[in-house]
Length: 165
Image (cartoon, rainbow, N blue to C red):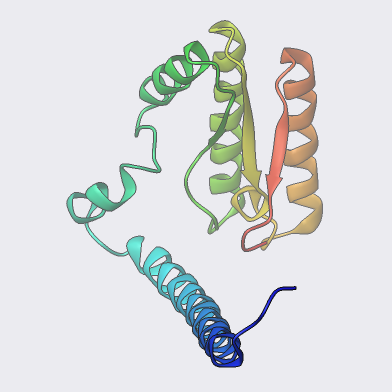
């Protein structure tokens, strides 16, 4: 028969209770911290567009493959060579007019052709607001339809990024 010392057992349960409370506090802190960081990231991301490029570049470098299309495609190729697929996004969100949306659509068209020419394992990610969704739904739909037809022709996938759409 096993004898259990009630003092040891009582001490064990007190320690277990304290650990449980500590972990719960940590989880609540983690939750609060993650909400705070999400808010800070959103605010920072919004204001980055107004900051000079020399200031933003060190913060963006881990997330931005390049400024020019060739830089981006070289990074994608390097990642493909290491066994990774890639998704390429043209940075930006909102456009001021239809001319700006057409320019973005043409940049994506060039990107699609370049992905196929280099035989990359890559897709593109498009924000509908970057194609003029806030300007005119039908206009955006037409541009997106043109883009999807081109992507289909060149066998390049498209993801729709709904971040702020």
